[in-house]
Image (cartoon, rainbow, N blue to C red; front, top):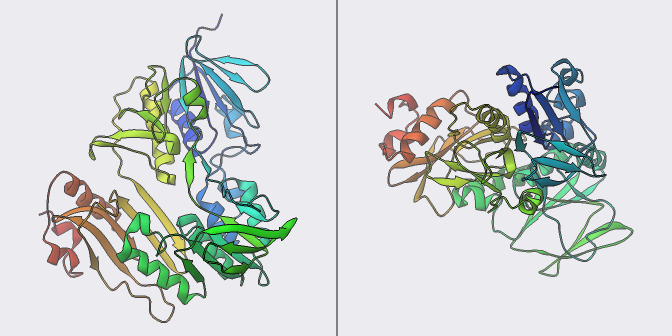
Length: 417
């Protein structure tokens, strides 16, 4: 009789795969079962809107592990497998078809799903979304020098797709109800940089307008905006945000509020169930609040943290939110947490102006009462550790000299003394 414990991971993305890897690295010798709905083995999502669309990343490079890794490490990977229910009393999950798999500990890394565009014509052919590998493949096929692309939503995904499309020569129009791209994430000051960057590469923006309906006979041919403008389109990509995939958790009675609510150890309201990645609304001990982070680094680091917590290790998941983006010749990294209404000014180090279509080199700091809440480095490298130190100090209550913060001649490492 095998009395070794069974750890089940629902969600075979980056967070789930890294959790399985960490369990083995930490010496866990029980069963590890990794269940994913997609037919693919776990892969990373950033290339879907970056290298795969640009043609600079080979498809084989997107996978978290080699195909043979799971068998070699005795991880029972089951793809194309949907979990339909969690029985918390009996401690098992139910698969589509009725099979039951018992667990001693359960980790939910179910991620998120794209918000749908609920307008007439939204189901026309070539109205596309980007979340899965197969969807990236289809978008890549549509990006040609003769295509007319309308991107609905000026967030990170929308802008990265727009940049890739322009690289392929497509005509691109980006539509958003806001007045600037990324306005809800970055605020006006830095959002203007991205607006200027994309305009310098030939992208047309339609701000302050929503989508009334999509027209076409079987396949989309145009987009009618709420202001009456009709935009020709042979492909529409919708990027209006994502929502955490909490259906399983809600049905099981776990606490859910903008994601599955966890403590700083990524433990849910059930003592045997953990959550990590996009789906987790985790308590952050430095920020003193629950936050849900939808970016790659959170999956990369959150999965291993949850795995260690499942093994009984002392875990406090306190990593700062971090993300990166590549658009044209601008590469950037962002660290911290600064809602657009939560800071009083942005301090620039360097000139953020886009000149002659060339991306600028600068840093930007979101500041409240002299405290750095978040920082971005754009085309300036090897400064993330210094920026994160400033952000941690800022959230802990330490202010810095803003004149020195703006002065490129003052090393970032000197600002905290």
